[in-house]
Length: 354
Image 1 (cartoon, rainbow, N blue to C red):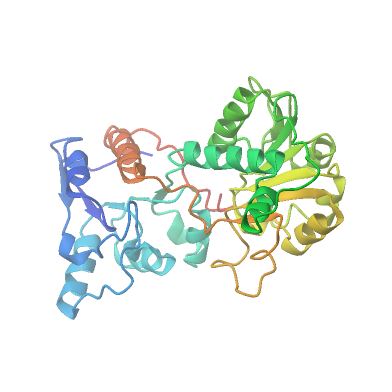
Image 2: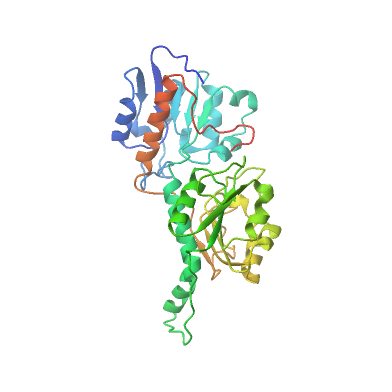
Protein backbone atom coordinates (compact mmCIF):
# COMPACT_ATOMS: atom_id res chain seq x y z
CA UNK A 1 0.00 0.00 0.00
CA UNK A 2 1.38 3.37 -0.99
CA UNK A 3 0.43 6.51 0.85
CA UNK A 4 -0.02 9.20 -1.79
CA UNK A 5 -0.42 12.02 0.73
CA UNK A 6 2.61 14.21 0.16
CA UNK A 7 1.87 16.96 2.69
CA UNK A 8 -0.44 16.50 5.65
CA UNK A 9 -2.11 13.24 6.61
CA UNK A 10 -5.08 13.63 8.94
CA UNK A 11 -5.75 11.03 11.61
CA UNK A 12 -9.06 11.11 13.48
CA UNK A 13 -9.51 9.40 16.85
CA UNK A 14 -12.95 7.76 16.59
CA UNK A 15 -13.05 5.96 19.95
CA UNK A 16 -12.22 6.84 23.58
CA UNK A 17 -8.49 7.20 24.19
CA UNK A 18 -6.33 8.75 26.89
CA UNK A 19 -4.88 12.16 25.99
CA UNK A 20 -1.29 11.02 26.60
CA UNK A 21 -1.73 8.25 24.04
CA UNK A 22 -3.14 10.74 21.54
CA UNK A 23 0.03 12.77 22.08
CA UNK A 24 2.07 9.65 21.38
CA UNK A 25 0.33 9.33 18.01
CA UNK A 26 0.98 13.03 17.26
CA UNK A 27 4.66 12.47 17.94
CA UNK A 28 5.03 9.89 15.15
CA UNK A 29 5.68 12.54 12.50
CA UNK A 30 5.35 16.32 12.23
CA UNK A 31 3.53 15.95 8.91
CA UNK A 32 0.38 14.50 10.48
CA UNK A 33 -2.62 16.25 11.95
CA UNK A 34 -4.40 14.34 14.71
CA UNK A 35 -8.03 15.23 15.37
CA UNK A 36 -9.15 14.42 18.90
CA UNK A 37 -12.21 15.92 20.54
CA UNK A 38 -12.81 14.14 23.85
CA UNK A 39 -16.22 15.75 24.40
CA UNK A 40 -17.43 13.87 21.31
CA UNK A 41 -16.30 10.50 22.69
CA UNK A 42 -18.08 8.46 25.39
CA UNK A 43 -16.10 8.19 28.63
CA UNK A 44 -14.39 4.89 29.33
CA UNK A 45 -15.89 2.82 32.16
CA UNK A 46 -12.76 0.70 32.50
CA UNK A 47 -9.35 0.46 30.79
CA UNK A 48 -9.65 -0.12 27.04
CA UNK A 49 -13.42 0.44 27.04
CA UNK A 50 -13.55 1.25 23.34
CA UNK A 51 -17.33 1.57 23.14
CA UNK A 52 -17.48 3.77 26.23
CA UNK A 53 -20.45 4.51 28.45
CA UNK A 54 -23.64 3.31 26.69
CA UNK A 55 -25.58 6.12 28.37
CA UNK A 56 -23.49 8.71 26.53
CA UNK A 57 -25.42 10.76 23.99
CA UNK A 58 -24.19 13.46 21.66
CA UNK A 59 -26.29 16.51 20.97
CA UNK A 60 -27.24 17.08 17.35
CA UNK A 61 -24.46 19.66 17.09
CA UNK A 62 -21.94 17.22 18.58
CA UNK A 63 -23.09 14.45 16.23
CA UNK A 64 -22.48 16.70 13.25
CA UNK A 65 -19.04 17.65 14.58
CA UNK A 66 -18.16 13.99 15.16
CA UNK A 67 -18.92 12.91 11.61
CA UNK A 68 -17.39 16.05 10.12
CA UNK A 69 -14.17 15.26 11.99
CA UNK A 70 -14.12 11.66 10.76
CA UNK A 71 -14.97 12.61 7.19
CA UNK A 72 -12.00 14.98 7.03
CA UNK A 73 -9.47 12.24 7.81
CA UNK A 74 -7.58 9.78 5.65
CA UNK A 75 -6.87 7.56 8.66
CA UNK A 76 -9.15 6.49 11.51
CA UNK A 77 -8.12 5.14 14.90
CA UNK A 78 -11.06 2.83 15.66
CA UNK A 79 -14.38 2.19 13.95
CA UNK A 80 -16.83 5.10 14.24
CA UNK A 81 -18.93 4.44 17.34
CA UNK A 82 -16.98 1.15 17.52
CA UNK A 83 -19.64 -0.53 15.38
CA UNK A 84 -20.05 -2.17 11.97
CA UNK A 85 -22.73 0.38 11.08
CA UNK A 86 -20.27 3.17 11.86
CA UNK A 87 -17.74 1.59 9.51
CA UNK A 88 -20.39 1.29 6.80
CA UNK A 89 -21.32 4.95 7.12
CA UNK A 90 -17.77 6.32 7.04
CA UNK A 91 -16.82 4.09 4.11
CA UNK A 92 -19.75 5.53 2.17
CA UNK A 93 -19.39 9.17 3.22
CA UNK A 94 -15.61 9.63 3.33
CA UNK A 95 -14.30 9.57 -0.23
CA UNK A 96 -10.62 9.91 0.72
CA UNK A 97 -10.50 7.30 3.50
CA UNK A 98 -7.37 5.19 3.14
CA UNK A 99 -6.99 3.20 6.33
CA UNK A 100 -8.97 2.25 9.46
CA UNK A 101 -7.25 0.63 12.43
CA UNK A 102 -9.54 -1.64 14.45
CA UNK A 103 -9.24 -2.07 18.20
CA UNK A 104 -10.04 -5.79 18.02
CA UNK A 105 -7.64 -8.57 17.10
CA UNK A 106 -10.39 -10.32 15.14
CA UNK A 107 -12.05 -7.46 13.28
CA UNK A 108 -13.02 -9.50 10.24
CA UNK A 109 -16.46 -10.28 11.64
CA UNK A 110 -17.22 -6.61 12.18
CA UNK A 111 -16.06 -5.72 8.67
CA UNK A 112 -18.31 -8.43 7.28
CA UNK A 113 -21.21 -7.24 9.43
CA UNK A 114 -20.85 -3.75 7.93
CA UNK A 115 -22.44 -5.13 4.77
CA UNK A 116 -20.03 -3.24 2.52
CA UNK A 117 -19.55 -4.72 -0.93
CA UNK A 118 -16.18 -5.62 -2.37
CA UNK A 119 -16.00 -2.53 -4.54
CA UNK A 120 -16.19 -0.27 -1.49
CA UNK A 121 -13.92 -2.48 0.63
CA UNK A 122 -11.14 -2.24 -1.95
CA UNK A 123 -10.98 1.56 -1.52
CA UNK A 124 -9.37 1.45 1.94
CA UNK A 125 -7.46 -0.86 4.26
CA UNK A 126 -8.54 -2.21 7.64
CA UNK A 127 -5.86 -3.37 10.07
CA UNK A 128 -6.42 -5.21 13.33
CA UNK A 129 -4.76 -5.15 16.71
CA UNK A 130 -3.74 -8.80 16.34
CA UNK A 131 -0.92 -9.71 18.66
CA UNK A 132 -1.66 -7.04 21.24
CA UNK A 133 -3.89 -9.48 23.08
CA UNK A 134 -1.69 -12.54 22.61
CA UNK A 135 -0.14 -12.63 26.09
CA UNK A 136 -3.32 -12.12 28.19
CA UNK A 137 -5.18 -14.65 26.05
CA UNK A 138 -2.32 -17.14 26.33
CA UNK A 139 -2.21 -16.68 30.10
CA UNK A 140 -5.97 -17.28 30.25
CA UNK A 141 -5.56 -20.44 28.16
CA UNK A 142 -2.81 -21.66 30.49
CA UNK A 143 -5.09 -20.97 33.44
CA UNK A 144 -7.84 -23.02 31.79
CA UNK A 145 -5.51 -25.95 31.24
CA UNK A 146 -4.28 -25.80 34.84
CA UNK A 147 -7.85 -25.50 36.15
CA UNK A 148 -8.82 -28.65 34.30
CA UNK A 149 -5.79 -30.65 35.32
CA UNK A 150 -5.92 -29.52 38.96
CA UNK A 151 -9.70 -29.96 39.39
CA UNK A 152 -10.33 -26.41 40.59
CA UNK A 153 -14.04 -26.57 39.71
CA UNK A 154 -14.50 -29.58 42.00
CA UNK A 155 -12.41 -27.96 44.72
CA UNK A 156 -14.60 -24.85 44.56
CA UNK A 157 -17.76 -26.97 44.94
CA UNK A 158 -16.28 -28.83 47.91
CA UNK A 159 -15.27 -25.55 49.51
CA UNK A 160 -18.71 -24.06 48.98
CA UNK A 161 -20.25 -27.15 50.61
CA UNK A 162 -17.57 -27.21 53.35
CA UNK A 163 -16.94 -30.77 52.26
CA UNK A 164 -13.66 -32.50 53.13
CA UNK A 165 -13.75 -35.64 50.93
CA UNK A 166 -12.95 -38.88 52.67
CA UNK A 167 -11.07 -40.12 49.61
CA UNK A 168 -8.23 -38.00 48.31
CA UNK A 169 -8.46 -37.60 44.52
CA UNK A 170 -5.21 -37.10 42.63
CA UNK A 171 -4.76 -34.34 40.10
CA UNK A 172 -3.07 -34.62 36.71
CA UNK A 173 0.41 -33.45 35.81
CA UNK A 174 0.58 -30.81 33.11
CA UNK A 175 4.26 -31.50 32.54
CA UNK A 176 4.62 -34.37 30.10
CA UNK A 177 1.12 -33.95 28.69
CA UNK A 178 0.18 -32.86 25.18
CA UNK A 179 -1.78 -29.81 24.04
CA UNK A 180 -3.25 -29.22 20.60
CA UNK A 181 -3.71 -25.57 19.61
CA UNK A 182 -6.18 -24.86 16.83
CA UNK A 183 -4.82 -21.73 15.21
CA UNK A 184 -1.07 -21.22 15.47
CA UNK A 185 -1.13 -17.47 14.85
CA UNK A 186 0.24 -14.93 17.29
CA UNK A 187 -2.14 -15.97 20.09
CA UNK A 188 -1.59 -19.64 19.41
CA UNK A 189 2.19 -19.31 19.35
CA UNK A 190 2.20 -17.36 22.61
CA UNK A 191 0.00 -20.07 24.12
CA UNK A 192 2.44 -22.67 22.82
CA UNK A 193 5.34 -20.81 24.47
CA UNK A 194 3.64 -20.89 27.86
CA UNK A 195 2.56 -24.50 27.40
CA UNK A 196 6.12 -25.56 26.64
CA UNK A 197 7.30 -23.68 29.74
CA UNK A 198 4.90 -25.90 31.71
CA UNK A 199 6.51 -28.96 30.16
CA UNK A 200 3.83 -29.71 27.58
CA UNK A 201 4.38 -31.08 24.09
CA UNK A 202 2.60 -28.91 21.51
CA UNK A 203 0.97 -29.64 18.16
CA UNK A 204 -1.54 -27.56 16.26
CA UNK A 205 -3.14 -26.29 13.10
CA UNK A 206 -2.36 -23.46 10.73
CA UNK A 207 -4.22 -22.31 7.64
CA UNK A 208 -1.02 -22.82 5.65
CA UNK A 209 0.83 -25.66 7.42
CA UNK A 210 4.58 -25.19 7.82
CA UNK A 211 7.22 -26.35 10.31
CA UNK A 212 7.36 -24.15 13.41
CA UNK A 213 10.07 -24.11 16.06
CA UNK A 214 8.99 -25.93 19.20
CA UNK A 215 5.84 -27.38 17.61
CA UNK A 216 5.88 -31.14 17.15
CA UNK A 217 3.34 -31.32 14.33
CA UNK A 218 1.51 -28.71 12.25
CA UNK A 219 -1.47 -29.57 10.05
CA UNK A 220 -4.35 -27.82 8.35
CA UNK A 221 -7.88 -28.11 9.73
CA UNK A 222 -8.27 -31.31 7.71
CA UNK A 223 -5.70 -32.94 10.00
CA UNK A 224 -7.25 -31.69 13.25
CA UNK A 225 -9.02 -34.95 14.13
CA UNK A 226 -5.75 -36.87 14.04
CA UNK A 227 -4.14 -34.39 16.42
CA UNK A 228 -7.11 -34.45 18.79
CA UNK A 229 -6.77 -38.18 19.33
CA UNK A 230 -3.43 -37.58 21.08
CA UNK A 231 -4.37 -34.45 23.07
CA UNK A 232 -4.71 -34.10 26.82
CA UNK A 233 -5.78 -30.47 26.36
CA UNK A 234 -7.12 -28.51 23.38
CA UNK A 235 -7.04 -24.74 22.95
CA UNK A 236 -8.97 -22.94 20.22
CA UNK A 237 -7.67 -19.54 19.10
CA UNK A 238 -9.32 -19.53 15.66
CA UNK A 239 -11.40 -16.57 14.46
CA UNK A 240 -15.00 -16.88 13.36
CA UNK A 241 -15.17 -17.39 9.59
CA UNK A 242 -17.30 -19.55 7.29
CA UNK A 243 -14.35 -21.98 7.21
CA UNK A 244 -14.15 -22.37 10.99
CA UNK A 245 -17.86 -22.35 11.90
CA UNK A 246 -18.61 -25.29 14.19
CA UNK A 247 -15.21 -26.81 13.46
CA UNK A 248 -15.45 -28.31 16.94
CA UNK A 249 -18.52 -30.43 16.31
CA UNK A 250 -19.60 -33.90 17.46
CA UNK A 251 -16.99 -35.56 15.26
CA UNK A 252 -14.21 -33.37 16.65
CA UNK A 253 -15.18 -33.92 20.27
CA UNK A 254 -15.65 -37.62 19.52
CA UNK A 255 -12.08 -37.78 18.25
CA UNK A 256 -10.73 -36.59 21.60
CA UNK A 257 -9.50 -38.86 24.36
CA UNK A 258 -11.83 -39.18 27.36
CA UNK A 259 -11.02 -36.51 29.92
CA UNK A 260 -9.64 -33.88 27.52
CA UNK A 261 -9.55 -30.29 28.81
CA UNK A 262 -10.99 -27.78 26.32
CA UNK A 263 -10.29 -24.03 26.24
CA UNK A 264 -11.77 -21.48 23.83
CA UNK A 265 -10.22 -18.01 23.48
CA UNK A 266 -10.93 -17.69 19.74
CA UNK A 267 -14.53 -17.16 18.67
CA UNK A 268 -17.65 -18.86 19.95
CA UNK A 269 -18.94 -19.76 16.49
CA UNK A 270 -16.02 -22.19 16.07
CA UNK A 271 -17.68 -24.48 18.64
CA UNK A 272 -20.95 -26.38 18.37
CA UNK A 273 -22.12 -25.75 21.93
CA UNK A 274 -24.65 -28.61 21.91
CA UNK A 275 -21.86 -30.98 20.90
CA UNK A 276 -19.63 -29.57 23.64
CA UNK A 277 -22.33 -30.15 26.24
CA UNK A 278 -22.70 -33.75 25.05
CA UNK A 279 -18.92 -34.21 25.30
CA UNK A 280 -18.99 -32.85 28.86
CA UNK A 281 -21.77 -35.27 29.78
CA UNK A 282 -20.17 -38.34 28.22
CA UNK A 283 -16.72 -37.56 29.62
CA UNK A 284 -14.87 -36.86 26.37
CA UNK A 285 -14.31 -33.37 27.81
CA UNK A 286 -13.56 -33.24 31.53
CA UNK A 287 -13.54 -29.44 31.82
CA UNK A 288 -14.21 -26.47 29.52
CA UNK A 289 -12.85 -22.97 30.04
CA UNK A 290 -14.76 -20.62 27.73
CA UNK A 291 -14.22 -16.92 27.11
CA UNK A 292 -16.32 -16.72 23.94
CA UNK A 293 -19.72 -18.00 22.85
CA UNK A 294 -21.82 -18.39 19.71
CA UNK A 295 -24.24 -15.76 21.04
CA UNK A 296 -22.98 -12.97 23.30
CA UNK A 297 -23.96 -12.11 25.93
CA UNK A 298 -24.45 -15.80 26.70
CA UNK A 299 -28.24 -16.32 26.88
CA UNK A 300 -29.59 -16.76 30.41
CA UNK A 301 -31.12 -20.10 29.47
CA UNK A 302 -27.82 -21.59 28.32
CA UNK A 303 -26.89 -24.67 30.37
CA UNK A 304 -23.25 -23.59 30.18
CA UNK A 305 -23.91 -21.03 32.93
CA UNK A 306 -24.56 -23.65 35.58
CA UNK A 307 -22.58 -26.61 34.31
CA UNK A 308 -20.26 -27.83 37.09
CA UNK A 309 -17.45 -28.55 34.62
CA UNK A 310 -17.52 -25.21 32.81
CA UNK A 311 -15.95 -21.84 33.55
CA UNK A 312 -17.79 -18.98 31.83
CA UNK A 313 -15.79 -15.82 31.19
CA UNK A 314 -17.70 -12.87 29.63
CA UNK A 315 -15.31 -12.34 26.70
CA UNK A 316 -12.90 -10.42 28.93
CA UNK A 317 -9.78 -12.57 28.93
CA UNK A 318 -7.95 -10.27 26.50
CA UNK A 319 -8.47 -7.20 28.67
CA UNK A 320 -5.62 -5.72 30.64
CA UNK A 321 -4.76 -2.34 32.09
CA UNK A 322 -2.05 -2.01 29.44
CA UNK A 323 -4.32 -2.68 26.46
CA UNK A 324 -4.86 0.91 25.29
CA UNK A 325 -1.14 1.61 25.44
CA UNK A 326 -0.31 -1.55 23.53
CA UNK A 327 -2.89 -0.82 20.82
CA UNK A 328 -1.69 2.79 20.50
CA UNK A 329 1.90 1.56 20.21
CA UNK A 330 0.85 -0.88 17.47
CA UNK A 331 -0.99 1.93 15.67
CA UNK A 332 2.02 4.24 15.91
CA UNK A 333 4.24 1.56 14.38
CA UNK A 334 1.71 1.03 11.59
CA UNK A 335 1.36 4.77 11.05
CA UNK A 336 5.10 5.03 10.48
CA UNK A 337 4.85 2.26 7.89
CA UNK A 338 1.86 3.97 6.27
CA UNK A 339 3.66 7.33 6.01
CA UNK A 340 6.71 5.61 4.53
CA UNK A 341 4.59 3.89 1.88
CA UNK A 342 5.10 0.39 3.25
CA UNK A 343 2.76 -2.59 3.45
CA UNK A 344 0.58 -2.52 6.55
CA UNK A 345 0.62 -5.68 8.70
CA UNK A 346 -2.44 -7.49 10.07
CA UNK A 347 -4.77 -6.52 7.24
CA UNK A 348 -8.31 -7.85 7.30
CA UNK A 349 -8.89 -10.29 4.45
CA UNK A 350 -12.06 -8.87 2.89
CA UNK A 351 -12.79 -12.12 1.06
CA UNK A 352 -12.60 -14.52 4.01
CA UNK A 353 -13.02 -11.77 6.68
CA UNK A 354 -10.12 -13.16 8.65
